[in-house]
Image (cartoon, rainbow, N blue to C red):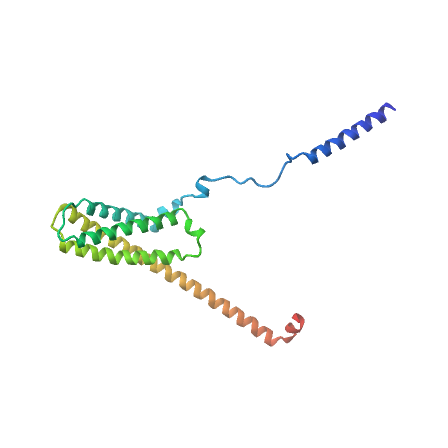
Length: 210
């Protein structure tokens, strides 16, 4: 009799523990815990900075900034149109290229796939190359042979050369992507034509599908 009471007590205890465990809000879970990353998951891509694209972008930003600083140290000018134009070109190139560098370095361009970032970079490098060339030539023709103006012209031409290299790399990559896309479309077209011919030669496939 005593043993039966102990067995009944053990059964009630186990059932009550199961009920309390089921009703407890603190249940063990097998779902993975997401670890938060700093700045909303933004991470710098060191491979991009070490590669040719990252180095060229960094050189562009540095040269454009130095050219802008040199032109800002000039206190007197006559005429000033060439100086103002060079100032606008160097400042615009520094800002736009700096933004693109951050987009590619932090992989932010992958979050906005609606924009063709490689084409955007190609347009930016092409325009920067052209305008740096024009601004440097104009400033070289209209300067007063001061140290700041000569330095601005030198860094302007250096920036133009680096932007030209970036434009060459961008055009090369754009052509490569275009060829890959065209070859992919051609293979898909050939595959579709092959499948349609198989269906035409084997009409029983159509009857089975119907």
